[in-house]
Length: 116
Image (cartoon, rainbow, N blue to C red; front, side, top):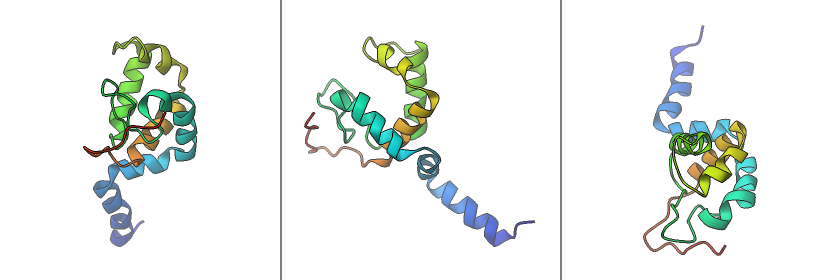
């Protein structure tokens, strides 16, 4: 039976940093590789988009990004470009990409657009 201190050592970090717990469960290196191959041309390798009409993904919560990618993949959310791209991502790809973007710092007001 775990002691209270062991239990708290596990629960406190999970409660204080739920995004970090999700990021650790996913493969950030695989997420980065998929972002570089599939997402970076529009959303930027650093998650800061190349255009004001394309959303920045850096710093978004992983659960939010996963939900949006699943909705785009299933067609529940409509976007002509993303409805063609999202279905090509596996469940692991979605988790990895979401965790990678969540691990990045969000765009600042004065952030430079991605060089892509």
